[in-house]
Amino acid sequence: MTTYDFTLKFAVPGDLGMEALESRLFEAGCDDALIGIGLKGRLALEFSREAVSAQQAITSAMSDVKRAIPEARLIEVGPDLVGVTDIAELLAFTRQNMRKLLQTHLATFPLPLHEGRASLWHLAEVLDWFQTHQRRKIDDALHEVAQTSMQANVARESRRVPAEHIRHFDDALVS
Image (tube, rainbow, N blue to C red; front, side):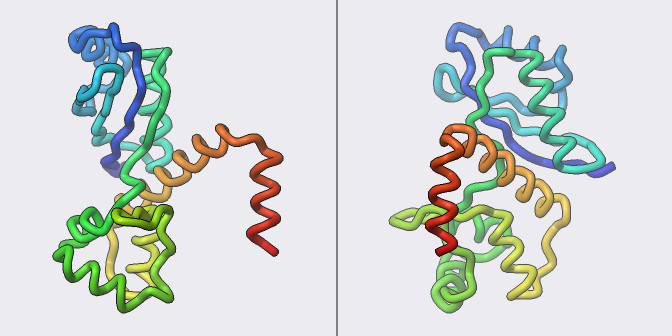
């Protein structure tokens, strides 16, 4: 068994108090998570869960949360979307060193999911690039969690778009 660290963010009913949330989550098996409530109606859970795979860890945690709070709606699974500062921190670089690395490897570095003042990448793609192009050893559990988080977030987003629209854009991207 491996311990996987990840975050699940949910929209939850705003009328649930912290004590009720904690109690329900604990009883449903989320005793391996730190609970954070920032905005009313939002819940973040930082898990450190043992499982045979990241997918099993994340899906079992999602099921536990849904059992505790059936009305909970998944917002995001992390770590997934990262900026330059996040990448630098994860890989023990300075932010400046990471920016320089990006500028000198524009042709091969993964394309950002969002480009602008604060560009965002899928962490899994960045980790793949570091393994392939920089021959950097990446923690297997982190890599697996990043892959699974990306897949969960992409699947969640794709459910929001009608299938015929996805096919239309897939065709346009290929041609």
